[in-house]
Image (cartoon, rainbow, N blue to C red; front, side, top):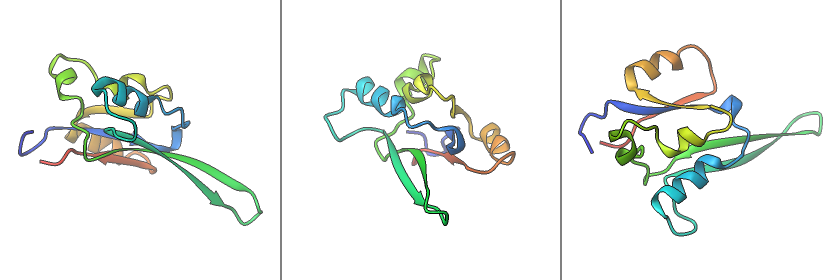
Length: 114
């Protein structure tokens, strides 16, 4: 991987529906054994003061994620981005994604380790 990655992944947590398509697509793309993968979706339940619960889904790349380098070299999107049913993931140049990050909260910009 390049020392100064130019590309990253912007994830908008507000719109993740917990479909797990990103996690499944990654596992299928790389034929990961069960329990391994470059993408994980965490289900988080928050207790609210009114005795109700709020369920959030948090997709995040793991240390195994390489942003689908073989796919992106061919001009295709990473598997997780291409299958995200809520369209809450964007792949692109870090500078462009950083500008989008400024526009709203509940997003995270992920850049692979150099």
